[in-house]
Length: 415
Ligand SMILES: Cc1ncc(COP(=O)(O)O)c(C=O)c1O
Image 1 (cartoon, rainbow, N blue to C red):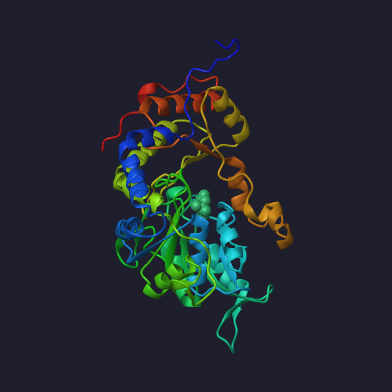
Image 2 (cartoon, helix red, strand yellow):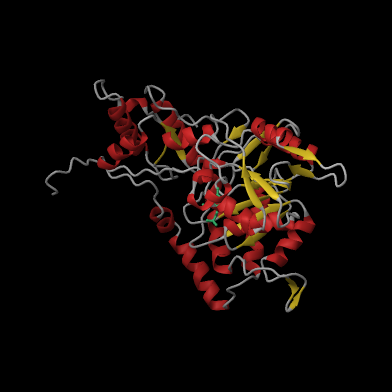
């Protein structure tokens, strides 16, 4: 026994072992099958997964690639984004979003986020396009006046598993002839109610194309690195199939220079197995989120996630906000509860982007949010008693003089 430890619970931030134990036999049979055929790259396993994932997203095509970063990059290139273009995204995302923009040869630029949803604020995008850009009378291109470069694409990020407000973003894109690539790397199965089409649309079927990551910790994760692009645009899908495979549609006949960015067959096989469980896992995450919501509602000082009526989040992360975030994180760590911060430093303030000369205050909503967010444990197998323990510790930290919330505040949710 440790002499000083007061730890009563051990709740990891993420449990990746349990789901793999549960699926061990199926995953091993995929491995055996792949070893038996030596079909390691391309082939029927990749095609099957692409078919199934396109169907899951409600998109016509899916192109499996090596990572989510490649997915964003290949989608931008296939959509016609050229070196020297500006691509607008948000500073509140993982750096892979902007890395992919830069790798496509473009310059990332930012608009601030909506304080409630943490996704791109369409009003800020409108302001950016209307106040900082103008249409060149000769070329018809939208030019950023200060940067003297064409703005050609927007990458809204469906952060934490919740879709950005896509209707107004698509309207603006249509008005200014911009490509929209959804960064759906955290949003497998998330839905958005589009008033324009009066229907619920899955992430991956809303923009011109969408990028997914299957990094192991995602809602749909490979047992290694993997990603995919979904699109309804056949020409884009064809181009991306070439780009991921050294620019060839036929072996050794290279129409363009491409990349080695293929999805390997073993990962595709693992993903097909896991895809069959994704809808259920997402429901389990949504149930856990409801339980968190109900229990946290009684605790002053906590801002719980806001899911507007137009979105059905799949809670890749369950992110709260508190003013003394770092102290709360330490308190939870002492109690054996794992947490994360997604993300502590907004992209415009990262050392890597110092040359762009943004400064503190450039995107105030994102900066405020980044200093207050804390991601609580969230995964399909998270148990009610674990949620109770997390909430009890959050309450103990925020209102130590008051009685901690009773366990019965975390009720099973009526499903
Ligand atoms: C929002 C976002 N975009 C892009 C990526 C890149 O995905 P990958 O790590 O598969 O390259 C990630 C992965 O963490 C992500 O969260």
